[in-house]
Amino acid sequence: MMTSHEIRRHFLDFFRSKQHLIVASAPLVAKNDPTLMFNNSGMAQFKDFFLGNGTPPSKRVADTQKCLRVSGKHNDLEDVGFDTYHHTMFEMLGNWSFGDYFKKEAITWAWELLTEVYKLPKDRLYVSVFQGDSTDNVPFDQEAFDLWKPIVGEDRIIYGNKKDNFWEMGDTGPCGPCSEIHVDLRSPEEVAEKPGKDLVNADHPQVVEIWNLVFMQFNRKADGSLEPLPARHVDTGMGFERLCMAIQQKRSNYDTDVFSGTIHVIEELSGRKYEAGTGMADVAMRVIADHIRAVSFAIADGLVPSNAKAGYVIRRILRRAIRYGYSYLNLTEPFMTKLVPTLAMQFADVFPELNAQRDFVATVIREEEISFLRTLGTGLGRLDQIISDLGEKGTKEIPGETVFELNDTFGFPADLTALIAREKGLTIDETGFQKALQEQKARLGKMQPHRQVTGSNWPKPTGLSLLATTSQKPMRIL
Image (cartoon, rainbow, N blue to C red; front, side, top):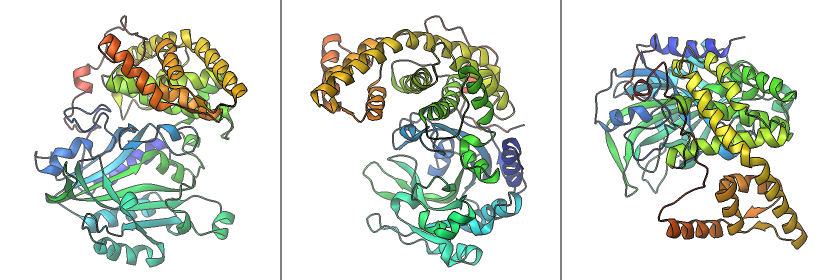
């Protein structure tokens, strides 16, 4: 059975054999692009090439890109830990054509790699094509349909709407129709009961999309209209973690060797066994194993937790993980920092920036943990009392002023309070919370998400410089 390292290497070697230049991942933090806070897809670093504003290093490129989806149009944070296949940070394997090959080659090569190199069973694969959209005046993708039909047969082709089969990086920018490839990982007994075609795009944990072939043809303008791009391009993205799940014949991304090393360390730290179930201890382990990747790589790419913008998002992710470990694994001392060495060694060959700065990354995370753990227990106790009082009153909503108090005094972001509330069958008064924030802004003359300020004694990064890790210039992977 292929390891995750072998799976990644086979992808890059395959497209190298198809005359693609293999380049390095861009940093997680988007640079020089006001439409993005984080790089949320493989194509982000190539955006200017699609728009005709720059010259790519090659007309054919492939890589594995670090992606983060926790804000904006693409946001998977709330699903992480509770299902088997969503992540904050994930790897996106991709191949691109900048005005060179188009649908025929993209479709043919995708099928060749999945079925001849990775040996995925053909009878477990389904594909989708864009059904068209009259609002945007984009027709049914007949070309993609005609290419797929002799490969998979018409009965394995699904017609997808704009939501599922028209890919856009954000509200503006390059976009176009796409063909998705889905895999059915269920048992033979389950397959016999219901065909996989009926479960495509139905959020089934074992019938999942693994590869999206995007045919970049348009630019979405600020007024919502579409204009043709100067040339037609191919932009594909394959979720590495899901691909490993399929090839290694697991029922969860977290059961693959992408996460098993980290989860093993969490087991040792907590004294609990990971059972791959739906209990909160298992959810907590998945949350921690996922979030440590996002936080560690973001810091290695030059971003530190803070109270503003991208830094605040990273702080929220880290505090979400700390809270799960504290509440469900009894991890009351800094523990996230202890996961960094294992993670750094795992990715040393493909993302060396983390291993080069692992001491700095571990120190930053430890400082954040110490700060948050000081108030976490008290804050959780206060929230428990609030929830108990609401129960006595028969109230199902936490007042906005209370949410603000938890945020301002205990460093609980509103979304963390909302998460805990949902676990108890409650909601929060979002409108009231926003009003309290605005009142504080008027008082102080500036917005402060909360009072916690840490990091003043963080050391300077060592090893790989921040300048090197935040560069957007594509580089060959040696």
